[in-house]
Image (cartoon, rainbow, N blue to C red):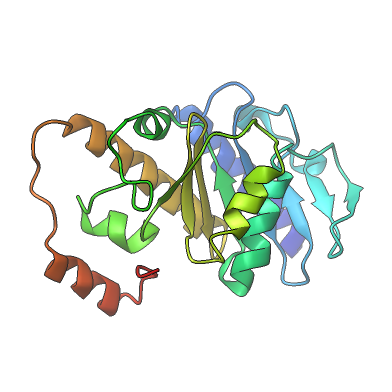
Length: 217
């Protein structure tokens, strides 16, 4: 099996798993993954994560031209901004409308510069600080501009009233980080008003230094 065929299958397998576990529903959510030569595979617009066809994924050449497959997700500006600003650190981008994450984006008292408090070690390790971006109409190119405004300093953002977007070094890393974000959102909601004990600044700094995590702005 060629590298392209393997990546096509991997995208569909991961998407189907997310759909089966309720992390996305209907035709919401999108995934992109980049080859070493700069080409991109992207999930098509209006497609369900539960029924993707590997042969119909949108394929872009290194110049950003659609060369085969169905029309891509309308969120391409969002994906492109992560690849442009984070360079070799990003090999895949996952965007969901997962329920707990969207719910957190609606809370009035969250810190837009760091949405999640340090509840667990893995939320720090896999996400760093998550930035809350304002509401944009789905598909609005301004979403990409907002991500570019972060200058590559964040690997995960939460779009208000919309959902999370996570970039990873490869597809597996991006998927795992996305799942960690949704679990952290769930913990955030479960502990609302309960004054949970957080990791201390010293504990967070230990994780940041030991695992070389992007944390400081």
